[in-house]
Image 1: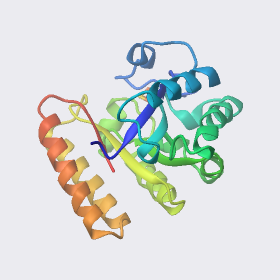
Image 2 (image 1 turned 120 degrees about the vertical axis):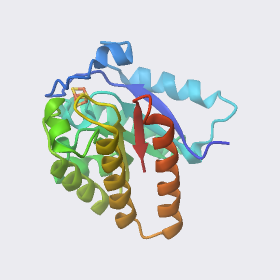
Image 3 (image 1 turned 30 degrees about the vertical axis):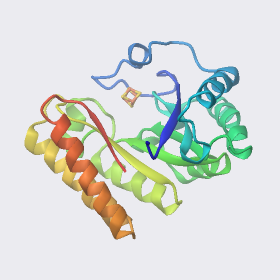
Image 4 (image 1 turned 30 degrees about the horizontal axis):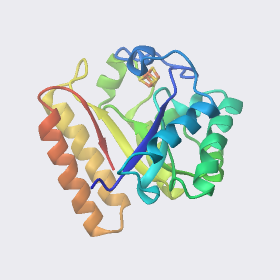
Length: 218
Ligand code: SF4
């Protein structure tokens, strides 16, 4: 049985100030509609009917777009719609995904207040030239700064990665992976978890590197 489950709610491109060369969130999520509290409730009720549903390993996950870059009032509305299920024990927390340059202390205080437990950062490469060529609008340093801040607030951190981006290469992708693993190992105090991250990261890399794809290291 999986040790983690997400109840995923997709928030389209709204709020993201960027237009990375590889991104078409409307296409990816299949939606241009913005989710409502009713959509969150419907997703939760559907998940609860699943045979594998377990409140202790389930997070309500706002994926797509850049969650912390969306308009503040709407972001808090979505957080409130998920937080009530954290409060009543239906889910263990909330997971969000966002850009490294949409993280700061003020944002993290809000996320903490509304039951966010995990943050996935779009850190698609740690090579500045690859980030520039794909119009990511941030640098590798922004990834490290945001990651350190997230960990200092006690959130679980996931570093997403896209292999095979324009201007990248196997060597560059491998370097990005190694830097991410090094960072995560440095930030973890538990050796077993570090080993787990390394093993999982390398295994995922082997599967994905050839085809080009998306990974997430935790
Ligand atoms: S930061 Fe994310 S949502 Fe925004 S354009 Fe890039 S890939 Fe798309």
